Length: 76
Length: 153
Image (cartoon, rainbow over all chains, first blue to last red; front, side, top):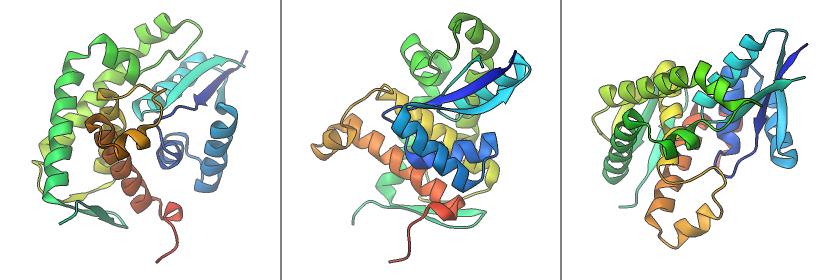
């Protein structure tokens, strides 16, 4: 089983804020972070990581929440 | 003189803001630090929304650590900034400021808040504060990730 990490759209976080969190925490390049942020804005959520171990997925989820995003983890 | 919040691009960042902006931001950060230490249910749920199919188990494993990370960030920010209108931020401080600017908003709004800009335009104090926090965070990000700043002029 794999575990996916998602980020969810909200009415408060800005494009810039989401992009920075993806850049700093997920390690995405700025262009990829912008593309993912646009996808979240248009579709409500996007997968930003996939892990074999639940603990690794939860760690990324927690780090994204510390950076202010609504992140979640679910079985992929 | 109008309020302003400006950052020169390139680390370490040189931040300049109006006296009023500095006083207001510093007071918000102090209020957030106090509330973050108390960590009441309203703030807790705004800061860390349910993150798994079994949210209680996730909270049991991670909420204390997430709370500690944010609390330590706001304490570092306040320890390094007494509210002066000019300051310098290295990358670690940028991340701390980003985290504090992000979470201080939850003093005033939920994630599903509507029409913040319209409320701010009407002068609602909570919305003006949220708008300032948003503006400061975007300015901070655009000073670090220069690809996001618009063309000159």
